[in-house]
Amino acid sequence: MALTKFWVIAYRDLVRNRRRTVLTLLAVALGMMVLILMSGMFTGVTQGALRENIRLNTGHLQLRAESYEVEKLSLLAKDLLPDSQTLAAQVQTLPQVESVAPVLWMSGILSTSRESSGVQVTGVDVTAVFHAPIRDGIVGGSYLTPDSRGQILLGSNLAEEMGIGVGQRISLAVGTSDGGLDEGIFTVAGLFDTGIPSYDQNTVVMPLAQAQTFARTGERASTLIVTLKNQEDTDSVAAALQQPGIKVLPWQELNGLFLELMQTGLGFYYMIYTIVILVVAVLIANTLLMSVFERTREMGILAALGMKGRQIMVMVLFEAMILALLGTAVGFIFGSSVVSYLAKIGIDIGNGAAAAVEGMALGNKMYPVFAPGQALVLALFLFAIVTLVSLYPARFAAKLEPVQALHTL
Amino acid sequence: MSVIELENVTKIYKLGEVETRALDNVSLTIDEGEFAAIVGPSGSGKTTMLQMMGCLDKPNSGVVKVNGHSVGQLSANRQADLRREEIGFIFQFFALVPVLSAYENVELPLLLNGIAADERKRRARSLLDAVGLADRIHHRPDQLSGGQQQRVAIARALATQPSLVLADEPTANLDTANGQQAMEIMQRLNQETGTAFVFATHDDQVISFARRVIKMRDGRIVDNGR
Ligand SMILES: Nc1ncnc2c1ncn2[C@@H]1O[C@H](COP(=O)(O)OP(=O)(O)O)[C@@H](O)[C@H]1O
Ligand SMILES: [Mg+2]
Image: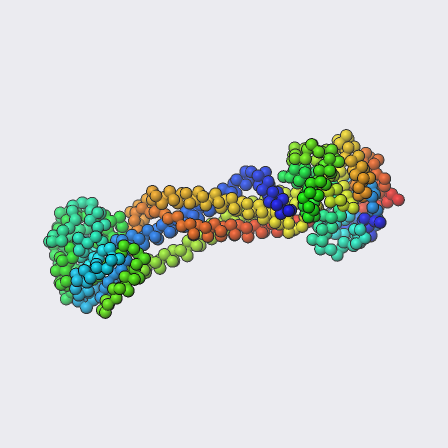
């Protein structure tokens, strides 16, 4: 078949112009690598941040009073869960549940003799598994016991910013359930570093009982944080926990803002993907156009032999497809290897960058994730666009008049 | 029977303001099996004449007939068909496809014509044998001498068994011995296959082989050799 010969000619022409071919292949491969790296980073950051946020902040499910609004950090009795301990025990009986942690949130002002800073005060059941990251993240002093009195933990970043050390006594003011303001003197028992700068920067932790006393809320809690053995069970457990006066929030809703942000981010990534793909495509088209110019005479000979414009076009397109296919494949292999390697060792992005992303549980190490589906789609796109753009030089070659081609001697 | 007829063909090239009448109202008939030379000084219109005969370009006015059919109204594609089936080309430079071997170069027009594999092989081999290159069939053009390349081009021009082969100064880039050999081969193939040959040349060696000499000057035929 003549078509086979066209492949042969295309292939041999590429081999003949070895340097140009290698350079073009390199460009395509690099483009593909960039695409895979970017997709890996994005997937890694978002999946990682979501996972961390679930682990450290939101859990898989939360139970709150129907009227509770998280922005207000209300301490009014009607906005709180009435009997948090009993409810916690009830939730814990479900086999899918891993841990349950009642939490009381309040906003406060932390003051030293020199400065003060707005903080989120979190009253936690210090024995709850969910708060293990805080216990494991103690970098100075010690963790709390359920009956430690007058003691708090500070995020290490917050302590550092305010120049507070372990053992120091500080003043903490919070609004109380009756609308008043209560102030107490506490001793810093320990400092924690959860690896989430945004969390470590404004969180004060104290035992739940002490927080309830301090804010005069009784046995009430702001929320019940539930983690599951399997994230997939979220919906079924949520359904099982439905009861009047209480709203059950799944992780999707708890991370709604984050997921929305992710969508926006994805749009931005698509834009960059498109740019990378177009740059690569234009590069290939340029290479092919050069190659067509250089081979005007050869094209003329083929035309004189009776080769049709369409056939000449196919031949040039074959060259483009070989370049695109090989380049994409090489880029795919290298790109996925690099991402897989980085997925193991992680990329250090530093505290500063992580802290800049407010309200997101972003670690100071980033772990890209190789997303084969996305990478494959990108590869197909790259291949398709490159082939499409190559229609231009191919048509150019096809339109060369045999005489015109033969006259450029 | 005539294989090519030019009737009152005029071809004008425009380069900016300058108009060149490369062919000026030329009429000429080439019959089956002819072995004719078109001679004339450089710039007299020989190449242009061959291009008209080979349907590589269209005249400004006049009619070109191949095997009795006018080609003026044909699309670029149909003209390509006609070239592929009826006309072989030999150029002054050794116009082989550089990435294909001698064998593949000869085979290419057969592939384009959809000839079956066995027949392709048989024809390509026997033609390469006929031009004395049986032991060079897998060499690429850059591994062949000028004379050898031109012999491959001759074999390729004849592969599709065309009724006419057009050769533009086929010996211009060959030394005397190689030029002589190429002409002898073409003469023999002309006699064996009955394919008509038309050469443009100003080489006396080539002219001495011709059975008909068409003389040109300033885009006109001054002697049609009949
Ligand atoms: N593509 C072209 N553009 C402009 N002028 C041309 C072109 N081809 C040929 N000519 C002119 O036409 C005339 C005939 O050229 P050509 O047919 O090549 O003559 P020959 O082959 O006898 O040397 C010359 O004057 C040449 O300069
Ligand atoms: Mg000429």
